[in-house]
Length: 316
Ligand SMILES: Cc1cc2nc3c(=O)[nH]c(=O)nc-3n(C[C@H](O)[C@H](O)[C@H](O)COP(=O)(O)O)c2cc1C
Image 1: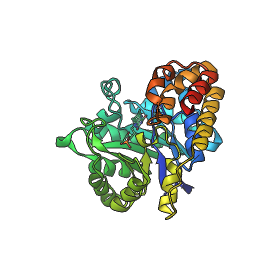
Image 2 (image 1 turned 120 degrees about the horizontal axis):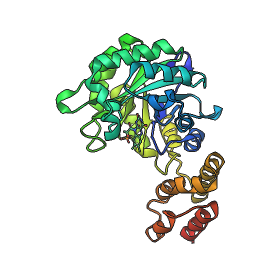
Image 3 (image 1 turned 90 degrees about the vertical axis):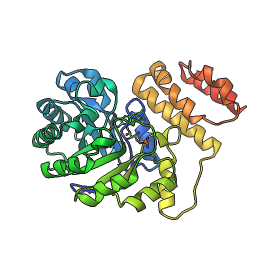
Image 4 (image 1 turned 180 degrees about the vertical axis):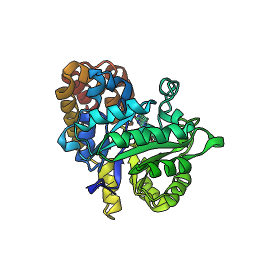
């Protein structure tokens, strides 16, 4: 999949707030994630020059191609934030029309915008007018089963000049429950001319291959399927190339965990990195015999040494 002559590939790491920060994105890139996204950035926070907001979209060259995702509700602020982000030269800017979180939706942002197609058009035009970068958008199927409008909204976005859309095959009402409806994403793909990226329920190499084949979408995104398994990108690429699966050995997994941790330490300092790493540790070790007894210790780690200790107890 190509955007403005930038090759984005077919297997993306989805935007994942609180999970896919720069250290994790870099690990995913090493395993073959073709394109990644930053965690979503608040247009309001950014235009008020909130330093913490700006930290969320910091990235390194190794992460390219990368999209910075913005959320908000005011077209002017969204445009201003796109102009600020442009100076960091990401490969594209993505507008969030998908987030179901109550605090975001209550402010009229994220998935709440799917109920306001006119405003979506205003935002898209304002953002596109403010930046020379390609602009994409990420949405859901609609607000609820009675209001499915991903096709209509994508047509509006396409008319405004949006370069591609990604569609999570659930409604706002579903949040993350039930099964993602790939057939409705396929309908979006059939109806519009711009590239469509599928999101929802990609948990294995087979899922990725089937989703691409059954829907004709240009790319798929891995979201919860990457928890504790950044090597899923390697599995998908091997499967698509008709090569046998290559599960990582225990020692490769250990190397990955420590490489991820070290990148996090470089980014946040040791204590904060260890605290932020707790959830990754739980995911990386899920299903390992004996892990249940070690979970309380994992939830308290505060240093690299403590993490190494927990891992060696697990291996013992
Ligand atoms: C913890 C978490 C954080 C997420 N953060 C974002 C986000 O910042 N922006 C966004 O567009 N989607 C976000 N999503 C949605 C995912 O990108 C994806 O569309 C969704 O999880 C469906 O894919 P899955 O069924 O493969 O998990 C998030 C999902 C999860 C579980």
